[in-house]
Image: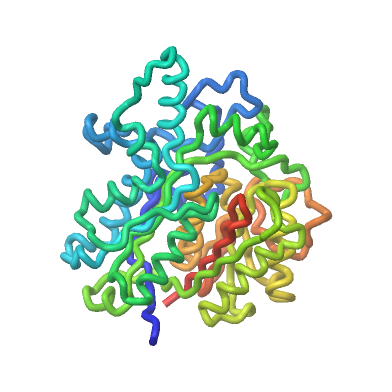
Length: 415
């Protein structure tokens, strides 16, 4: 059976550095930091008092009050990103067969704010079970694709992928495989996360996973820097419209790139720490290249997982050097988490959009906040530190790794 080709025909984003895809891209290139003091809850007593929140987001600008109350912030952000992507792709105007349009979404946690509010309310209720009737449907991780499908009447495959921080990259790969097999013509694909809550921050703080650089929060997310002390929690959503190539051509869609490869692997090592030799990272990139039929020396750019954690940055850097050999020192690699923070389950898709941007605009955004080289990371690697670089990118990859050892990698090709 000959597999069908899969292309990108639209995208949308709402992130800590831009409330639509264009704004997001422009601020990536400028090297804007999305970190700021937390406004979503009182962080006075927390070790970390800053995060990368979505700015100037009022749900009532996007939803009727009654509808907004039925959605966790995680879902609100996801629907907003999906609306932009669907509009961008023109699939509604072109009257595609909605029975052949799916929605596959990724979220690592789901409606954490809703869960926290309801459980704390229960704790204060002296044992009286007074819960919001929308508690469960607002909280569950799979509800966002449900809302998107209901808004547009999309009857194709519909579900959520949950693999921690790899969730939305997994969603892209699942969508790609379904389209290749002819199970749908179009899939609205992406991810959302809204974990900047007391329990989210407190939980990650207790793991010693977050930066505590409260006196210099703008530069706290510093991937590959010797003095990095953890990641910065972010929130937001991204959406990519994936479409079968011949279907896109037939309707005259604008095709932005081909999703040519998707790789998956497991570290099989530790709940939260990466394999020390980067084995899972190496395997997932190798699998992605093989899926795309691309050789290592053809890769022009890699958007790294690059969370700004002491162990993760070293393991991934070593994996890239092992995979690409000498070619690794001739390409631009970067971590856009230096600007957006770590969006957990939504990280994969917003970083895939950043990788797409390098193909569309011929610019690789910087890794900001680099001050001191880490002697444990090969200095010959070009991390695009502090300044964007113009580059003709024909093939771009994006890595996303999650707690539990879940690894996902996608590869886009210029057409």
